[in-house]
Image (cartoon, rainbow, N blue to C red):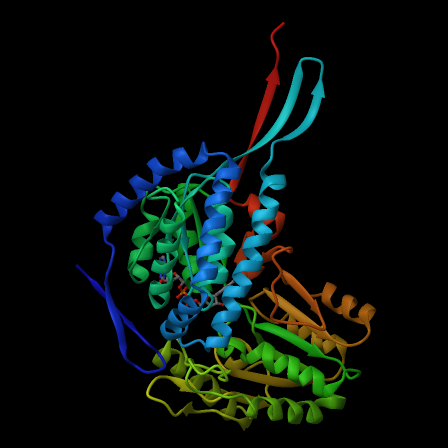
Length: 459
Ligand code: NDP
């Protein structure tokens, strides 16, 4: 049996080894999930909610140990691990509250002897292939509404967040979720690929564009729903009328929180030329103040690079390319000390769009800052990307911001904020950033298929 070695990226130490799934175990799990799903679909929503509520209570009880596990497994600062679990609870509560009204039967027409009703029915057994950067948050977007809507879930965590995935399964079991309804699938990308070959009714994927595209191509013949939450190269435009210090602090956090390993992290900053030098100076000041080190230290802001070696190599290649093309290194630019993989927070100025730094997703503690002549140039550069997840404009002038944001092709538009997701709003990407959406009432409906009921009484 293939084994997966789980390594703490901050120390390089092996935490444990796990047995991986294979084609036989996957077929067994998928068949069991299908049997379990039929009973779950017939269970009233209020009873499903009661089970999920017990899951929530258990999570709350075990929050400190779950945060510690997450921190050790992915190198996330412990304070941010707690923050992620808090965020999970907020999303969870919203989805629980909205399930009843959103999934209820809708009587859309009535006349003597005739009713027309839209009824939301579950998809069946869904595959949830997830990412490691926020396993609780991106998991919540999928498995909570999926279970509420009456589906079974085959949950494949990233190999880098497998222990957290197993902890989720344990909590569901303790909460009394029927067996085989939420099942973990352990292994690397090849196991994810094998999962797609099972008898499933939908695929909900969070991860990179490259993998998402492969999955969409592989599933095309099956004609089942495929949703993709993918990467980004999210831009921000800083107008000349901002409070420079406050904006620099907000954008430093937007770019470096979770070590920049967020799908909606700020990845490109454009600044009106008239305040460019002052803004860069303020940004560098904030970034140099970030505390990097042991993720278990509550004061740490920058933890380890989860993907270690590979991510570090990508960041170094982007820096080398930028410097060769005339960028200026303001701070960082190298691996930081530590037994594990740490990367010094990096700011590059004098950048331009021919540089890899401004085109490829970096997914690390690095940011490029470019001067622009005016609003028109800012819009042109912000749209010069294959991605389309979020975009932000900082200015006190709401009308100016809305005019600019309307011209940008992204799933989310931010005025004076960034790197934020609300459970009340749809979360979606355009172009290479994804297909379909999660969260909000619409995201709940993604896990159901509306069926048309034409009910005519006899006679
Ligand atoms: P990957 O695409 O590398 O992996 C995502 C998941 O797919 C993992 O579980 C992975 O397994 C699995 N996988 C890999 N290859 C295959 C395959 N051929 N078939 C099926 N499954 C496969 O992404 P990362 O985990 O590195 O996540 C980072 C990316 O996710 C970034 O681009 C980020 O922007 C994006 N993201 C997007 C979000 C959004 O909401 N839009 C939210 C969070 C992240 P394994 O890890 O075990 O190899």
